Length: 466
Image 1 (spheres, rainbow, N blue to C red):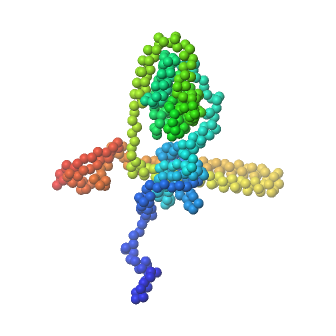
Image 2 (cartoon, rainbow, N blue to C red):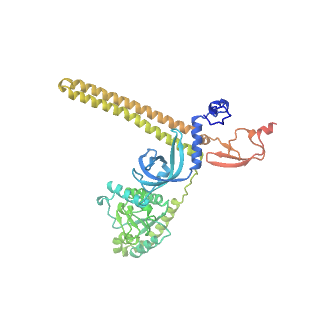
């Protein structure tokens, strides 16, 4: 009841409001509107808290709760952003998260869509180094018995490093002075920056597959922990461990240690020391190999040219669009359905386990010689029913998940574009459905499956008919 003056009758204006002026919101429209407002006002925020209930999904996305003493906030970190993290999120870790606040419409639940994350306190690079070192050590990748000796007389050494740095010059000078007949195949790679880890992994794979080298050296000069981040990545460490060829790690100075040093078959204190170790045996017989020097030099140049040609490729990135955002929300929905399906599968098992426990209690209270046979029969029948029900339920849920995935793919407008159709938008970005929406001189944008182009209306069918 609203407050009125003493001369005005007391009326409940909410109930007196005509039904014709009420706005009735569909749930989906209201939640979508709230999501747009929240994303507009909180599109770029930093949030600090403690990770709890961290759940990596099979899709590569990561879900966890960010909490403090007074509140908690669900967080989703999609696969592309999760792959860029330099440490492994885990429960109890205090972190600083940057992202945008959004609403997961299927649950009507507010959440933070994370873009970046860093630990509070210890640096992210140092934390990632410690986590990865313990993980790989537990897997046995640092064990001495898995490390292979270097070939005494390698014919070709493959070196992965920057072609413009002093490292390659020092390496080649020492190799040329101690054994000029040794073939050195340079595979250029960035040894610092975001792309360096991927380039080093690709270089190892290419050298392994080439069949041209006998030993591989990964080299760069010294630097800070940030500069050496690529050599502390799990991808580089596993590529070194998986290499069928012996790998020498020659990174930084004598006091610099990286994950690559622990995994490699041999750690050289410096790149120059690596050159000396590799040429130790050849240096003693170098005088017998002088006639081969010129031929090997020409072969090295030819192989270097081939390696550069194979490496000359430019990655193409596509900006996120509304369609990709919709697909990411659908992926999150699939993760949610998968989690619900897992709960639905496990609950009948737990229920039958409790029932079996009750049966065991009854058996213990009675004479087991009289009821043991009947209890075993009931237990076997129960287990058979559980297995049958579980198998049928898993098949049903899996079929439903596949149907949802097929439906999601069929709803993607990009699939329609791949079949030769196009989407035409006016200057304001609105969809053009009829020739009545355009006039002579209008600029239109036509979206195809592989891009878009702009055109100007010279005439339309409706105008020609008139």
